[in-house]
Image (cartoon, rainbow, N blue to C red; front, side):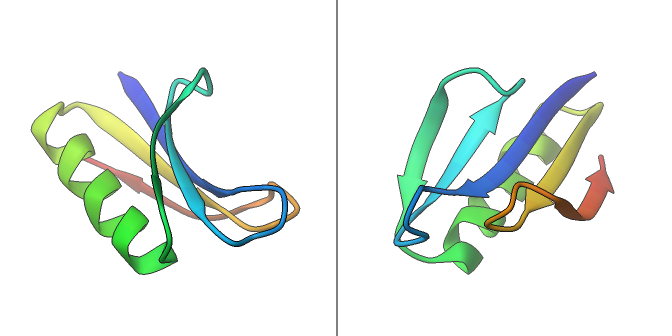
Length: 65
């Protein structure tokens, strides 16, 4: 199962989509845009898991596809 995460950058001015907590796949200016893109990636690569993190890198939401 692949694991995707949406996490903010250091100053929370952008949001990264990461695959397996390695390098960032893409950066988005909006949290909603990043979540929408990550959901699409996760659905296309099912089975997968999506974690949405806050600025403290705490998981605030988790979805499975």
